[in-house]
Amino acid sequence: MKSHSFIPMLLTAALLTGCAVQNQPAYDPELVAWAAETQSMAKAGKVKWSDYYGQLFDRFRALPTSNSKVAMMGMAANMYDVAISYEAGKISKAEFDQALRRTAIAQEQLDANQMQAENDTAASGRASLGNALQQMGESMRQDAQRRAAPSYRSTTKCTTQYIYGKYETVCR
Image 1 (tube, rainbow, N blue to C red):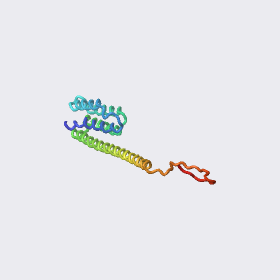
Image 2: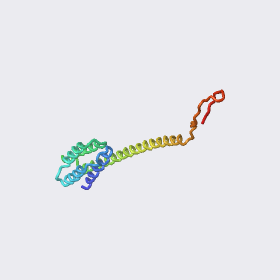
Image 3: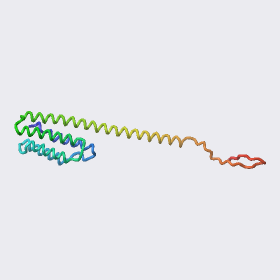
Image 4: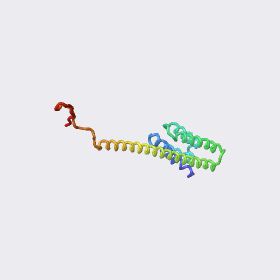
């Protein structure tokens, strides 16, 4: 049953990916620990797979809103249905394992898409910051040029005076 060992890893990756976008804690360590422990119990036959996925769905639903929350809930709901079919004898062990592999592939694609969206958002933010800094630098350069340019305003005081019978402008 080695094919089931990737679920806590996927859960951790999904939690790391989804919550990081919302600036929430990177993951819920209690949920990851619970998933690993309960999955081990399901592998050993101490817990039914349907119970594991049903509880996993409920725990995902209790998480704060994130971009991947709905996808994680969907994965758990889908696997709950598959587990019910497996436990009822409607599908074989091989079909159950195949459903786990398909879910893992879908989760990996979701994680890749989520990471790409985060990278795009971060790049856009860096570009906006770069543009703002460039505009600020240009404004500062223009201000410095204005301050460094010679001033043509006169600091000389001129007055009109009556000198030798006529008015003349005298500047000092």
